[in-house]
Image 1 (cartoon, rainbow, N blue to C red):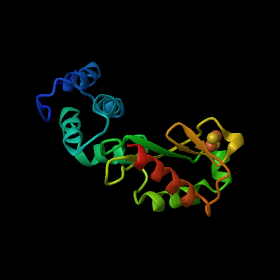
Image 2: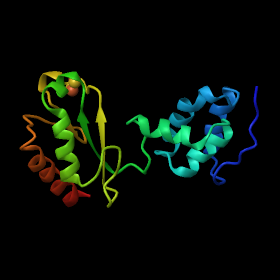
Image 3: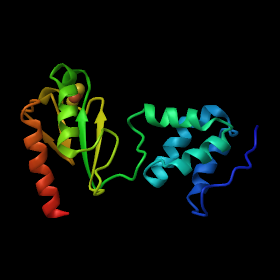
Length: 169
Ligand code: FES
């Protein structure tokens, strides 16, 4: 079992939860993904100081931690917005142009996938099947599924929802 002498980024007690995950795996490199999951569940996202802490504790280069964190769409590198916009890119949705829909949503929200709008209100992510394949392509605007989407009408639908979000948030 390895040990770690790395110090957490600050004295927030939640780092104990993260440390417990790494300790359980003997601070071995294979604990990286579980550690990143724990950080995200505990703090809501992974910032640079968290990735540095994971890298130092697991004896890994920061570039490896950053590479894993940016490879998986699941990981958020900034705080999550109050609202979420999720584009399904699973097979049924992909066949129906979801890759174009992602681009249109990014345009409408002025944000790239995996990030949150500048006002902190909306996070954009992708999912690999949200269980509504018969409605494909599917876009989830908070808990509501937007249907009958085409690359052409997506911007209008998203902008309509953003107007509603701005009125109510
Ligand atoms: S693949 Fe998109 S809902 Fe199933």
